[in-house]
Each structure stands twice: as C-alpha cells, then as structure tokens.
Length: 582
Image (tube, rainbow, N blue to C red; front, side, top):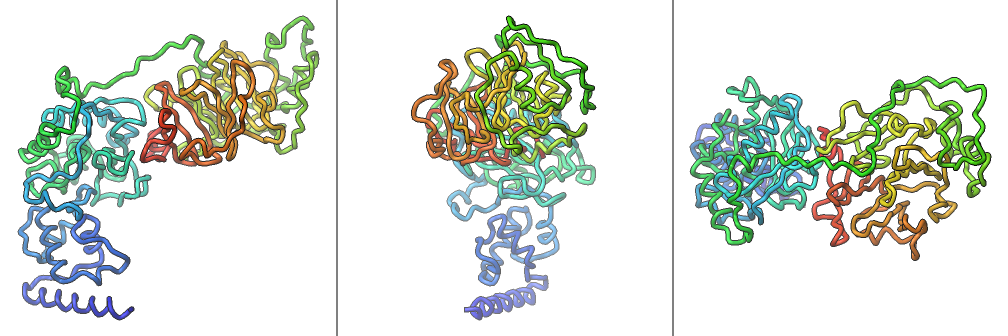
C-alpha cells in the first residue's frame, strides 16, 4: 500500500518535469504552493501527503484558475508573477467552491443564499488600536451604506452580541477554526449568511496587519475601508470574482473609491432585488443615510438606585486598625437597621455572623470545613485576573447594568458591552460594606420583587437591599432549601420565560420562588433539562433585552427561551465578543 502513492507521485513529478522542459519555466509546485491551492479551493482537500494523488492535468488546471482569479494570463505555468501572486495580500475566503460550479459562467459569483430579511443588525465586538473605535465604526457604516444602495437592505448597528453580523479583530487562532497567519497574505475573512450557523455574516480582521485610514500605498499600511467593503460582500452572499474591477476581486488592490462595480451590482440585484424568498417588503422609509445610523438603546432609569460607582478607599488598602471597642446594639433595633460596622477588614465570616447575631436568634447551624471559609486575611495586593480568558466566577444584570466577577475583582459593562472606565475594581469598592475577606463570588442575581442583590460565595450568601445597604448578617445556602452538603453553587439567574430564580450546581439545578421564599416542588432536577448546556457551568444571566446566556470557560451559549435550547452555532468565544478582546 505504501508504494502506490509514491509511484503515482513519481508519475506526476515526471509529468511536471516534462512541462518544465516544454515551457522553459519552473513547473513543480512546492508544498506551500500545493497548500495554497488547497486552501483557496483550486485543489480538492485530502489527507496528509495528498499532493501525491494529484495528476499533472489537475495541477495545471489549478494553476490556470489561480491565474484567472489573479487577473493573469492563464498559461498553467508557474511563472514569476504567479508565484508572487500566491504570497500577495488577499482575503482569506476560498476562490473556487468545489461543491458548486454552476455559476462560473457569470462574471459575478454567488457564494451562498441571501439573508432572508431586509433589516440586518451588526455589532462591532472590538477594534484595532491602530485605527480606533470611531474610525472602525465610521468606515463600517460607510461600507454598509454602499452595499445598501443596491440591495434595499437596512443595516443597523446594535450593541448586542446576538446581532446578525459581528465585526471583530483577532490574531492567530481566534475561535473560528480559520486562524490568521500574521502580517501579510490573509488580511481578513468573512462568513456567508447563515454559514457555520451563528458565524454567518461575521467579519474578522487580522489584528497583526498594519491597519491604516486612507492608506494609498501598502508600504504605509493596509487601508481598512478597502478591506471592509470587500468582506461585507461575503457577508451578503457574494463569492470572489475574477474581474479585477470588482470589489470582490480576492487580492488587495490598495485604496478603493468605495463604489460597487457593475459586476457587484448585478450580484446584488439577483440576491436581493429579484429574490422571491425575502418575504418582507423593502423598508422604503429609510434612506441610505438612515441605514447607517447607529441605534442607541435608551438608558432605562431603574425604579431603584443604581449601584454606586466606586468607594473612595485606596485600590489596594492596608489593613485597618482594630477599634478598641464595638458599639453595643439596641435590643429594640431591627436587625436590618443595624449600622454596617466591621471589626477590621479581615474578620472571618464566622466572626461576622456571631458578632451581628449576638442579640438575635442564631442562624441555621452550618458545619463549615476550614477550606470553605473565606481566609482570615488577604494580601494588600491581589493580582488582577485575565478577564479575556473567560472562566468568569459570576455574571449578572444588576440595576440595569452587566457586572462580571472574577477573583477578588469585578468588571462593569456599559450599555454598549464595553468595560466601563476605571474597572476592574475590588468587589467591596462597589458593594460597600461587603467583607474584604471574601476572595471571590460564585453567583449573583437581582430579585424581582424587591430589587435586592444576592451574592453567593461558598456555603454562604449576602443580600444588598434596594437602597444598596448590606444586610448585616451572612446567611447559609440552606435558607434556599439547598442541601447542607452542597459546598457552593455555580450560577444563579432569574429566567425571563417564567421570572423564577434558578440555582445551578454541577449536574443539577433548583427552581426557587422568591415571592413565597421557598423551593418549588420537584427539585433538584438534572441539567439535561437545559438541552445543550453543559454541566458545571461558570455563570449565567439574562440581559435587559430578555435574552439568556450561559458561560463556561471562554465560551458562551445564547439560549432560546421559547424553544428551550441554545441558538444554532453556539457556543462562541466569550472574550472576543462580550469584552472586545483581541
């Protein structure tokens, strides 16, 4: 069996040598050239060492197609210009789709089906520091506007990671199985509508490129707009065109004037004007200018105060001196009206319980192994964890804002899913009075009935009321009807489908009725009921739009509340899309 491919390779090699002698030019492609022709669809992909299985005719035909899509004479010979073309800056989308040759007789090439609607949303997940957010937003809006003129599509920028098209920058392996190759060669790639499910329409730019605004020469940098308007053609369903003047020509041509070629207009006409499968009527109310207007979500003023911005204490505080005495508590004062006083910064949770409950009935007895207790002291400096790697401890929609917890820190997101200026900060800097000895939060949620915020860590939980005051007692998980042997929960959320509170731990979950203050009957239940969601999740939350998300590692799932399963194409990378990491 081992001799067959070697023998066949020898025949192909002799065939190519004869070609070299006939044409007087180098004709034997290197492994890198074979890889190029496979990657961009000129040769069918096969197993390792499959170059031994290609006939001389197949190689010549592939070279001719390479030359065709590079606007070179189709000689089938690997001359200098053809070899240089294979290393030229270009788009990462394939040129020849082996599964569909029926449209090759046209000038333009349809790569996939169209969008089935006329209102297309897009979300700019991150941007390159070489260009900046404002420039990326401006040029993306301009590019969308050009395609809108000939498609009757309306493109709307939203600040929601469930948008139809997600625009982002990444380096190397960036989560979609199509890694970038560093500076040069592949500049960007995009996905056709509905391709790879949730990736459909997305546009990814290689962060390692030297992106510039209005660059007139490649030596100055890669012109961002010229690449963006090309990639959006793929997002709308167009494949590469061998016509040099087309925006869909696969190779970088330098700065573009930003107008569609006749070739591109014909493709848009077929995909979106003549298409009978787009059932909704064109939105004639919107002009091209309106189609590029940024949608701003109105800021909803909550019925209760937002969480405070920052505590005025230092970022990494030294331990406070212990007071000489502790004020006595009045026997007539209700426990929730006790002033928030802590004996130093580093008391243990058990000390905190016993001190604040000295004149109250003792809480439910909980046997707490030493490893479950927060440490008696924490260092004055705690390294900030890498939020871009995912693995959140908790995430929650609190007073209309998204908060992410990891280690001793929290991150606060704006309405545009951007990290708020000044963050991360230590947890106690926002949740004032929260014990500084607690090293992390396992789960968090906001109760619907009274807008109180519940924070979980280990076997315990704390409550901040609607006025942002910490209820003085720390309570055990058993208050929720959870088993005493449960060491921690993984996540908590109020599910918009029924407004019930769900608590997750390992391969089980519970449904809790906050109004009645008791666990619903029939729980715990298996995580199998949350179809498509893994066990041992890290975090979960619902957002202001009513959408539900689950997180584990550096991946997240968008959950369809009506169909009770994840949306197609999930999970996706968390850091790139939720936080704008590159």
